[in-house]
Image (cartoon, rainbow, N blue to C red; front, side, top):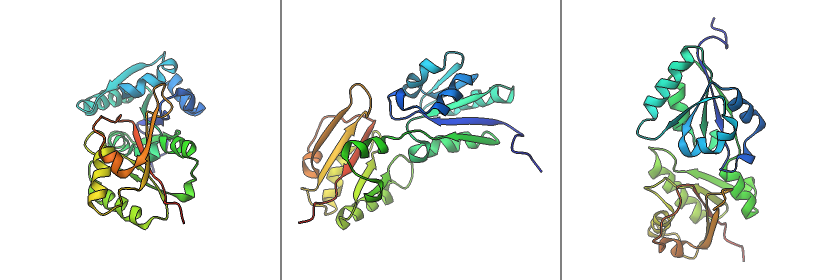
Length: 230
């Protein structure tokens, strides 16, 4: 029988939505003690104050496989590795988790605060009144959009949606649901770069959102508000 301590081990942490004040104490400790810290550069920028003793391994979509191969190779040489992701690992980090899990024997997860939690706080809505849908995945987006339209027409829940940077963003999503029969006067809010210094929010109707031609941030989250009962 193989013990849980045998084999290669990596810690993956959620760093929160952007303000490193939302990094958990457990996540901060893991970063401070790591030999290597890997993640997308924008994520690493959040944890730089706590990674002073670590080798930084920034990665982009085009080279993330190579960077992870290198970092896990260092783990096999006895080094400790922390991989960082935005927000909470249980919300939109599945692809990164899968990539790491394919390479090591054990993964320790340190969840963080997600933009979903911050958005609910900003909007004053509760988890029990919310349907959560994410497009942060490479497959299954069509079924997720069908689910969005279903719940919009159902009208009994607020809907929180994570767009897919940059191919399925708020204006295009709004135009798509209108084409599928959702009333254009349905109220919605788009938050951008929550907890960052340049945080922004926009509120209006679905039809007004569909008409927006300026770019939204890749760190956007959409709320479709439950219709107010007469």
